[in-house]
Image 1 (cartoon, rainbow, N blue to C red):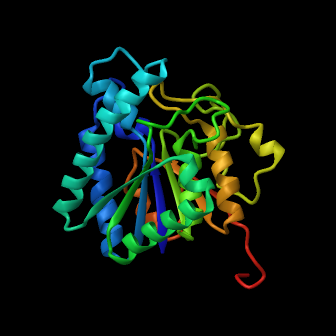
Image 2 (cartoon, rainbow, N blue to C red):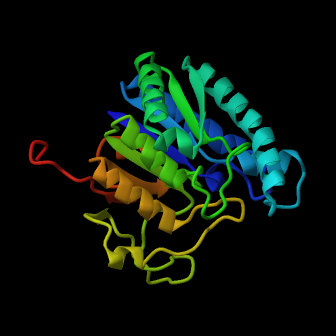
Image 3 (cartoon, rainbow, N blue to C red):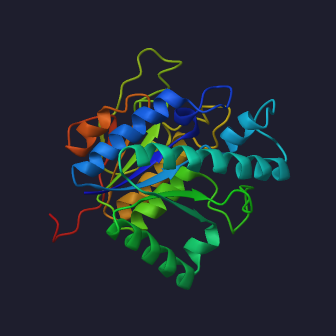
Length: 264
């Protein structure tokens, strides 16, 4: 399969903002094994700002845009260096792809981006995609930005015509209520369509270093569905589950992509 995997800041870093080395090593080991099994992978990785916050010894996620951008520039270097070293350990090649909202929205640039990603996959590389946060902004209402990587991962899945999008988070999936506050909350294993009732289940942002939440994941599920791509939300702390997800075993919450008459 062609699989896009999104890894969130809360999965990649400790609460201090520093890289969670053991978890990243475990994830890249499984990613590499999935490639060895014949799957094509695109990785959409958050964490640049969070890693920059840790490396610059800032007290927390910056509130002002210039410091956010500076943290992203520092953190992106550390993130790509780490991925490059770890993938090389398993004889795989990592490739950095930084983009902005304009690269997705403007038809000519979008075609170039699609061609680049497709060619990287043909060359058996692992594209590692992130928004270019050093020059883009995530302010509400700014048209040149995508804003957060849940949406970006769904856009990338659409661009590369992925079979599956996996969003790794700090929660096991979509619940009937917030499981951190409600002991009676139940995991929803399959979502056929993102309805108003499903959207009402979305809570706020989780990690203090992250920018996404369940609402952005549901937005991503809508984009993936329209592209005919299944999407799974799963816990990034349990990287071994990726084998089951790739094999079609029920894990987390699976949002079913729109099936055409031909595919059905």
